[in-house]
Image (cartoon, rainbow, N blue to C red; front, side, top):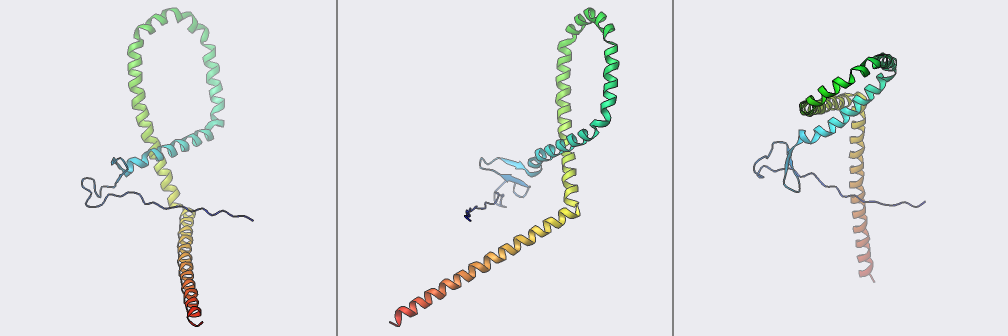
Length: 181
């Protein structure tokens, strides 16, 4: 059975030192372009994505119950359509006159709503992450993973030492064999 060996190099994130000037020790990270971004601001999009996914799952779970009520609403609206068609010619002119104002206020309202929803999703995602981190089975898995990593590092160290000792022993035996001839 053929196996492939891959190697990965670990890189540590760039962290500002105490002598790096402004922003040192403020929880900000310095990138390649020397732009400083606060760590909570870097997490917010991740939390917002998680919150949006959590919200979508919650809404999907509510879907079977809301299906019948939505059908009743749509049938009620369909019954009122003939009366709305008769009023259409007069309401179109009024609507066109008010359209620029409505569009502007609608855009402002949408921007405000998007900002609020983004914040709500980020908050929801952060709460979900916190609940997952507090979960006993998650804590147990993290503990077991840390133990396995520690044991792997210890095995790696002892293997290196054994290989080094074996190499020294081979070198010593080879030099002894060369000098006894």
